[in-house]
Length: 513
Image 1 (cartoon, rainbow, N blue to C red):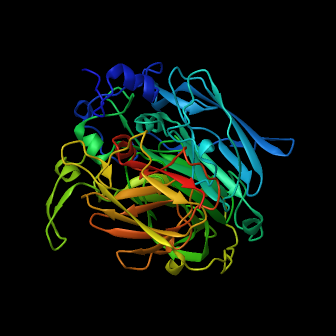
Image 2 (spheres, helix red, strand yellow):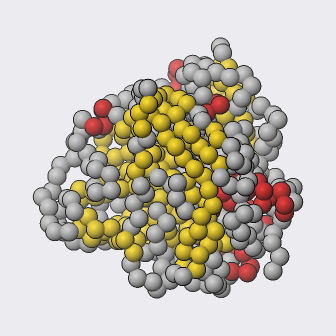
Image 3 (tube, helix red, strand yellow):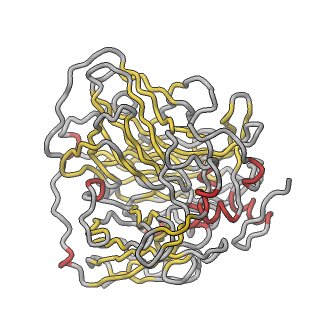
């Protein structure tokens, strides 16, 4: 079987050099080689495994600056027992530590690239200088160190860091270059929410991965994978398959990150129990919202609190909503389905239940009451905006043509120049037949409306990634408060990583008014 050649114009040698797969021997084959496999249940019959909790890294304070030292390197991981697969990790063979920092402090991060290929590390959700953003322009060449410094401006929440390599984000994130960030602040600390890391405050990086018949990790690059995004046939949480967590407290806080390349998830508890939604991408909501299901697209995060006071085991499960291509009639009804609907059950299907995490309470505990008020912030006011910008997401039908406003990503083109401190409305319209999670760097925005309708509870707070459904328009209110640079850009893009790599991304600079 031949290795694939990426359809974005890179030859095989350039791809392997860029995507960080050469030295590790990362396997990249057509999907057809690994079909007719286990259905996607998050399980292949193996027993339960204790959930791996990423190591917490609080850095060291040096001359008033919190300093982190990170090394990106090749590693190995057994996705199937006894079968080692090449991976990429940060201070670890796969994934990386949870970085913990506080709002208002200055941080410096020393990132050493020990891969024989280039890499980047993007601080997803952070407001920071363009030179520290970790996007495609901040390439860390092999054997070199990158040391960005910035002030932590974000509200307390779960953020994350991951590869943002030009045309190579998908393969590097898939291989393991991703990990959580906790930002804490005084406002949240005062609420006495579950916050003991690894005890009652647990990060969950949910990812799907594809293995070949021998159990080795595969990254497919077919036309289908580029159009739909890469989707695996097994579920891993913090790199753990069939994960189990033994909970010793009455309330359990789960910080859920959809770290998959393309798969959407509808999370719920197996018995239909209620969860309390308390935070979205950019921090606490105004109040807890009782929910029975939670949909997250790639790049999105949410925090839920579960009551375990009755002492009964619970299962966090998910279904995967169909996000295949669909031909739409003029009335908006689907008249033909393409892609995954015609591929049997290798994609998991919208009805298949995915095992995410088994939660086993250790003894009964008294039920605790959450605060009725979590955070105070005003509703978004569109009247303060002085300009509206429109972004139309589209994709060609034959494996190419990923675009925003009719243009594919060009590292040499600045698509937008945005004045600093100016409130704007960004209209994100989806002209394609798939949903796209739209991510904006250097911003925590507010959702004004979705197709003219008020946002859901998950979208009433601060967000950096928002789903735009087919033929839908979402309006966002945002401004960039500081950090001007007329030459060095930030990105906006689809967070289905194969769409980003294929060109559904643009660049903007923040300039003085």
